[in-house]
Length: 188
View 1 (cartoon, rainbow, N blue to C red):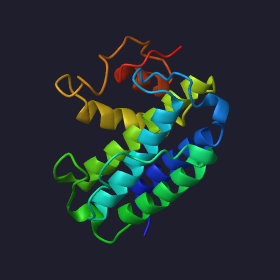
View 2: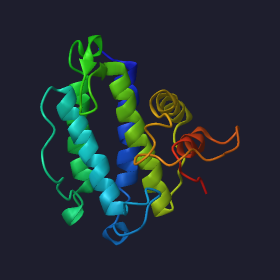
View 3: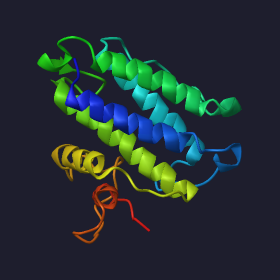
């Protein structure tokens, strides 16, 4: 049975996988809009979060310790594919949207959890595109859904250490740039 949330997340994963597939070894030390991370660290975070959320949604504990470097030997694309397969399987379990999930931030309705998963992954696809000098465009429907999730979950009290203050952007800017601006990124 298809679920609009899972279908949207699958589309976000496809978009993000395309961007990750363009990363070369020469790109790994480039800076990103996430000022604390270079491309390597951003990839490791993004892929690690997908694996961690998948584990939490499936009722397994997230892996302990330092996340492995999934960019070693050019393995980022393959690691991301493995993570997305585990994630989509977890989110596709029968009855998953009838209850709550917990992937480290406490129990929350599954629909909220998948919104956070979608938001995090899509935002970091934008960050990665920006770092690599690629087209940052994201399907408008996906970006609008992520922006809606962001406005519901990212308040001023959760920004410190996670998101910079929102920056101004034109009301008619593309949805992907409005999303980035809401999360403290400066669309170029």
